Image (cartoon, rainbow, N blue to C red; front, side, top):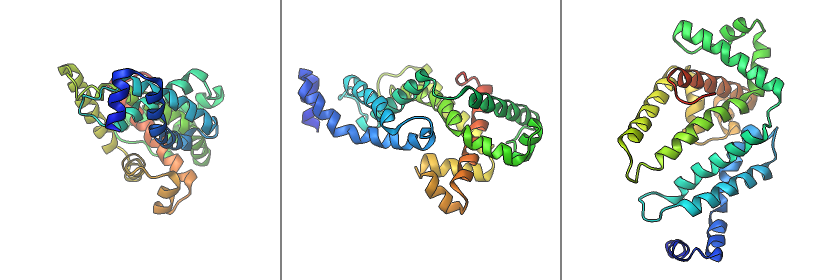
Length: 245
């Protein structure tokens, strides 16, 4: 692989580039597969693959083989970013669903900024004047929107992270350090069950099905917990001025 990379960067030969794409196509399938867990009801898996391939090609073109950075790390951020950017452009979310997501987000904002802690289902339902079952169903419906909007910010910040092994500026180093601190602070304010789901999904990279089995609940329930956790994280990030939703 090192020789293939060297040959491509020296010659820019399309044949070498095609070989690199084929070697790393599995990365696209991995990223698209995880994202399909959220967006599968609204977009085809093959479409996610297609969006991701553009990110892989971009990563191959821009990757600097002299840097102390694994290509897989670099590429996954580019692939995810390409998929997110494409989803945003096609506006795949129904207007009514987006409205529901905004209403829940606003309710959580009011409650958490008044109480200084993570809002629970009962409090959010009361603020929205709906029953808890309806809220839980809606949280499942809007899960994909919540995750996508948060990922837009994190992928953008990830682009800055990619520069840290190069000649980074003090401002970029500070921004990444501050983002890590804000995320840590936000996660600590989640309920214990929300923390566990976030940890198992993002750090252990388990699927909803695997997490549901561990916690002995339904996949739908994991989706609800995750969706609520993401909204709380978005709330604090917004308050701290990280990204615009």
